[in-house]
Length: 330
Ligand code: SF4
Ligand code: MG
Image (cartoon, rainbow, N blue to C red; front, side):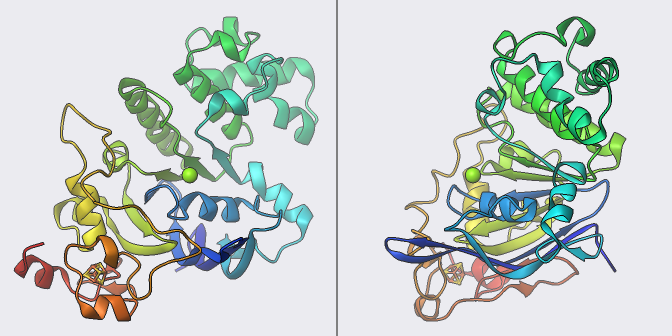
């Protein structure tokens, strides 16, 4: 069937001093209304660049979309006119970034910034724009919105500023919200509150939500499905329960092992040794082989493809099926 957003075989390259960097190397995923997809990977895995390509904010060289499709309601955003692209961006697909403080303008009241898109695109008057800003601030659960609408960004806490950013992204009632590390700059309690808010809004507004994160612990409670990226490729995707209960790919297993359970969350990926490869020098064969405890000779020679495991919509890019890995100690 047709999905709301269907990204197919996306490839993005950068020119670097070391040569061409294949930052996104054949990535596919899809998301439907009312559903949350998490895209998980370490810094440099290509997940943010993927989101930027979907948003159409990669236009400046040296980043080039080499091939693929970004189908939104069946329309390929990679081939539509620049005008149509601008229309979709913000109105249909909106994005929230990690750093709310630098994304907000310090010299304008938050309400003014929240309603900016409504004033410029819909041409509504100041009084209506202010009223809509208050509604949006209520919607993202900023207390006393009517009293705070004229306050400036520095008068808000980090968590409240992130709520302002979410309100701004929702002003045009997008069908897809992409949140790139929306809680990374926040402390653990506030992270959970923002995740709860995003999950609530996703349900209330029947949006598709894409959460981009390096932290599996943060998305566990809110994601329906998870796509794991490594070195510009999808290495595993599955529904969240399967991924947690039976991770297939060695990289996912490493990520899972490094999620501190219960009280200490957020130690990241330290249980996987080594670092992700330079995208201009991705290892031959399986890109993960230098860090993989299961690596064999074949892994150094041949790149594995994404292969379906058992039931529909679960796949892993490893030469060895999960049972074969289980049978061998890492
Ligand atoms: Fe590890 Fe080999 Fe599987 Fe890559 S293909 S994840 S190196 S076992
Ligand atoms: Mg990033």
